Picture 1 (cartoon, rainbow, N blue to C red):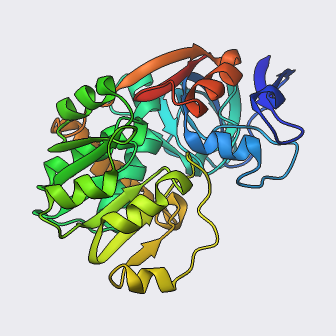
Picture 2 (spheres, rainbow, N blue to C red):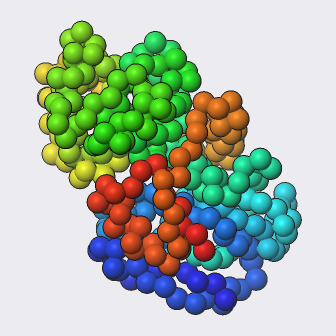
Picture 3 (cartoon, one colour):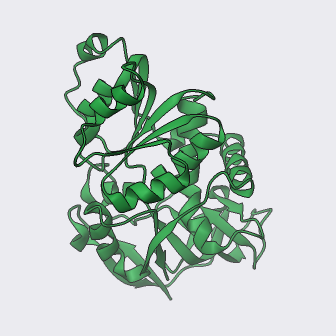
Length: 324
């Protein structure tokens, strides 16, 4: 019997419910997967709250590591006992076990433990596509990273340093500043006590930065606009600090002919080949030591609502793992 999370309406963490489900045998093209570690990602709160609309009722979560228990008709490449991972786009990872499309799975390397995999896959591939496919950051560029102590931010900092970029990191506390420096940040801004844009211009001798990776959204939008160099690129990829709306594109001209994009991972990971290339690149960066996933906290799987409250309150650091 599987324990599965679901929502019947959108709202706060309290809308997350649990039920027992008798799983049918995996269907054609499916794999029965027992989860050993589930990744919590900020996008899960968007689905739960309705920021990103989903058809209801709906499962939650897209990222998990686990073990293949059985395979359905037509599945090749996976056998019972294989260690596998998935990061979507299929939702429903908040579960002790489930049937998932084989096309969304990949094998986990022998040296990668399940908790680290669940902390790394979605956030790591997000870092990969933001840096290498979307912003196309080059060695020698200076990049401003908002929420640099978070799960994605922590990986962004290490990745950027590994490819030769200079990293300016914005964080909310001295503790997070220390961890971000250890991850490789060249400059750290405490956004609660310092003016981000003013500090960026001090650091860059008044020029601003050519690339900004902004996972916060509304709360940092003005600072991002004011921190960008002429013809700079703002990559707004999250809404942790509210949705960016009512954008006046004339502002982009006044701020220096800026570029802005609002990308999502699965517009860059469309084909199996694109997805595999990203996973391979991620694991290569991990093997080289360029990135060091940080598991800041764990929660029992059925305390997912409490985990949502913590991440939305800014009380977490690094990655959060839910354990069945």
